[in-house]
Amino acid sequence: MAGQYKQGIDFWPRSVQLIRDPKLRVPKMKYGYLAVIVYELLLDMMFADKGYYIDYSRKPDVIWTVLEGLMGKHQPAYETIAECIEDLTACELFSGDLFKREIITSRRAQETYYRATVERKMANIDWSIWMLTEAEMTAVSDRSVILVQFRDVRPNDSVNRPNDSVNRPNDSQSKVKQSKVKQSKKEIGADKPPTPAKSVKMFVPPTLEEVTEYCSRRGNSINPQRFLDYFEASGWVDSKGNKVKNWKQKIITWESRELNVAFTAQTQASTGNPFFDMLRKEVNADDEGANHDVVRDY
Image 1: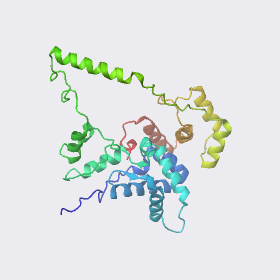
Image 2 (image 1 turned 90 degrees about the vertical axis):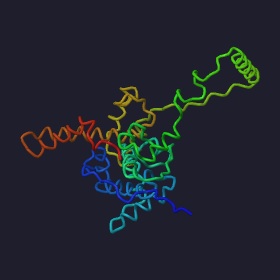
Image 3 (image 1 turned 45 degrees about the vertical axis):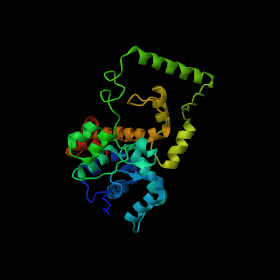
Image 4 (image 1 turned 60 degrees about the horizontal axis):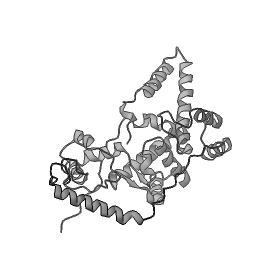
């Protein structure tokens, strides 16, 4: 009987820029060094177990595993770790869409796993949560068993489909048969009642009291009135042109923006000081460097 193959990996490359990632700025302002350690512990758990994701449906097990790594005199509370994980996801260090499905992962983490398993002969991938495209995988290596499996399970293109026009029979008899079959199907389904339309959940803008209460409870240091004024003026469309669906998720993004504005204003007011001049350049580089490596997700 063949032995079971290894799913996770023993080592993962840690970027020297990790703690300076701009996406960590808001969590570090709120949780201090704890945000960095929780982030690293989650990556350790991810790579060691499944290899490229964490099953967050086992939320208590995940949080208690993180707490074991933080065991000591000043161990944080269970609720603090849960909120920190949510804020790390809100800052796009993990995929927000997959987090809603109780999955912790990111494109950068999956790329790291892909690089580490290129020489393996077997791999078990859940394609419903796999984020890398064929082009991205091919750019890393075209010899990976993951890429081979991906090509096998993806939908066939129009050239290989059995219904391609090149392979279709062209005689009129077959066309008549097809038209009769279509007509009979229509007649059979004519008596069926129409399918009711799905209800669409409408977005309801929050009130000042709701924003104030939420920020007070979560410890977000923003001005609720400025937050409301900005999004009401924009018609509840964010800076990327996307319609806001969940205003609570935008609190973290807004807090990051406010901190950046305040931090930049402070450094610009300190002209003539080499230290603040250096910080100012770093902030400007972070704001303008959309292609900077540290901005990419883990």
